[in-house]
Length: 124
Image 1 (cartoon, rainbow, N blue to C red):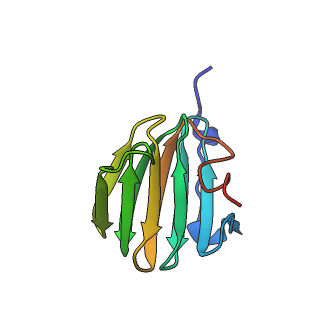
Image 2 (spheres, one colour):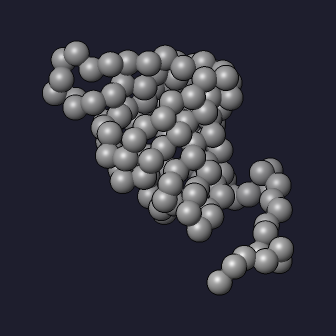
Image 3 (cartoon, helix red, strand yellow):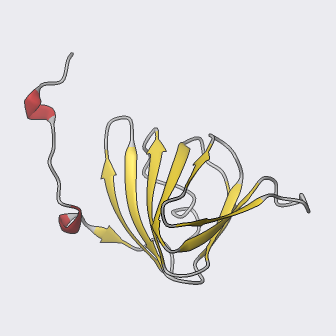
């Protein structure tokens, strides 16, 4: 069945519920049928250990500085990428990755398909 104009939603980011599934992280999420957007604020020192998920993930850094480490944690030559405001990284489905906020950082994370849990939700 085709969507109609009444199916559209207009939201204010400031009105969305905020959660904190890990220390040093605050998040607001919009869950669509085929996509999820997470507005994430990380405090300097935030770390998420290596994990992977079926979702494709695009992380857009709006402000701050964050290091992504990619690949198997047993690989001693894992690539690292430091992203700053205006940069983005595309993480394919099932790619192991870790992240560390090198300073307070604001990110938009886009996930497809959407899911209630991501790597940060598994690390409480």
